[in-house]
Structure formats: C-alpha cells, structure tokens
Image 1 (tube, rainbow, N blue to C red):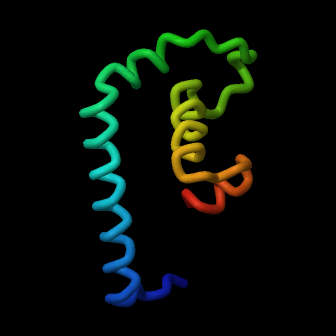
Image 2 (cartoon, rainbow, N blue to C red; image 1 turned 90 degrees about the horizontal axis):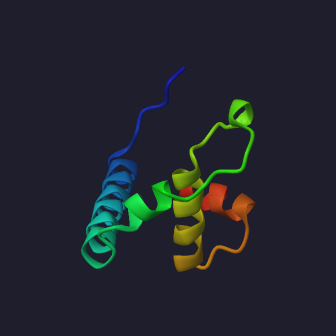
Length: 80
C-alpha cells in the first residue's frame, strides 16, 4: 500500500534535489576532471563481487568528508 506524499514532504524532496544539482555544478566548476580521474583509479577488488563501481565508492567517501560524516553507516543513513 502506497502512502500519499504530502506537499510539505514534496517540497523537502525538491529542495534536496536542487541542493544536489547545485553541488554537482560546484564540483564540475572547481574540479572539472574529478570524475575522469576517479574512473582512472585501479580497482583491486574481485570483479565478480562488485556491486558498486569504484568511482561511486570514492565519490561517496569524498562527499561524506565534505559533510563531516564519519562512517559509511552514517553515510548510508544521511544520503538515503
């Protein structure tokens, strides 16, 4: 059973989306080659066990450092 999203919740989600868009703009402006550089890093993990690409994990850690999130568990809680 789906619950209906209230206007207040919709506004909050929209604000978070706009914040994410602005963050992407800042990263692309100040660090235009960041994604390319992260993609070039070698991934030592066994390829058959990989769920998330290396670039996603690295960017998640960078963002969690920017937002002062100390652990991956807290990162998951904040970003989800």
